[in-house]
Image (cartoon, rainbow over all chains, first blue to last red; front, top):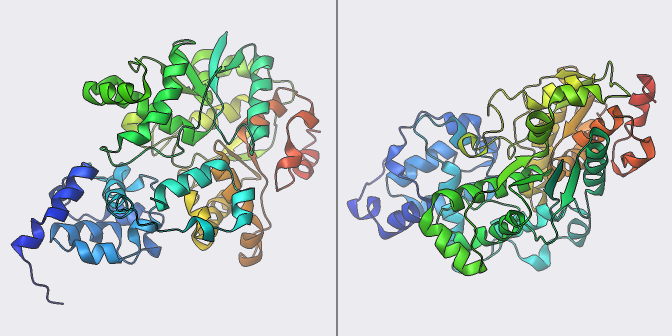
Length: 135
Length: 289
């Protein structure tokens, strides 16, 4: 696969914004893959955690935004716990989610959440789900 | 000894048996969990983006209320513990953020409260020896898998309750109760957490991995410290049984129910009837009841 790297993409405003709100320096990642290995949901992600970091290092934020990875991340911090460079992919993915949610775009429509779930699930699941999926 | 206690929203309703069994166990051991006079939901998730100060205001309010009632705060739910402890660290160590958050919630809180999980209270304030001495109904012969999940342990530098990869606090408590702790590979892996809202398949897979991993290592019982872990494991049970050859299910209870059981509390006070999987056949088989 051939990709075209552009300085404007690598140093784009969206990449700077993501680094600022997530508090993470994307360049620290040296692609050891520990995060993808430890992540309990990487099998479900269209772009695995270590690949997310690589895409972003290369300025390919649009590709990452299109993938399901940020919505599948459970925030368990196994990636951060096992990263030899102290990067938190979970924080980067939360930064991407926040980029969407802060524009007022919901990932889950509250009206579509099954009533059975709202009635039977522990409150913490509902509150946490709203925080992760609803603006 | 009287310790200020934050139940959190889930223990006040959905996980009442977690709350009540802990309070009764504390009384049996000789200390009181004194519920905060005023408290609110902690927000159920610590914001992973450090600029998201608004999400810290709810837990900051809880901590500020706790500060008016003592220098320590204990909680049972792993998520509440994670959110409160991490927020407290931000308030203690970051002057600028502290000023902003205090200004918003109209309080003057400095981060001086010591946030302890109930497990830490038992280990460090009471001592597992004293817990052991209070045991009246040892859980002898029950091979028990302690399921830590994520929020109790990670991130290590903020939580610090135990080693994040090889924790022992839970197993040591189980030993004090007379049970046989079983270390299993998935004991620190995620149950699927809030994906319960929109991705049942992932939750069933992850929770199933936890339960089959425990049973594969010999566990006959799993104990949890988080109502969401408890819910996800229990809710996945039937689907995992039908999709996993050889797996017939495993009872999942809160660790405080196991504690109350060992301390000789009346069985009917432990709330086992609220658990999805019935633990009674196992207890009868082991001659405990």
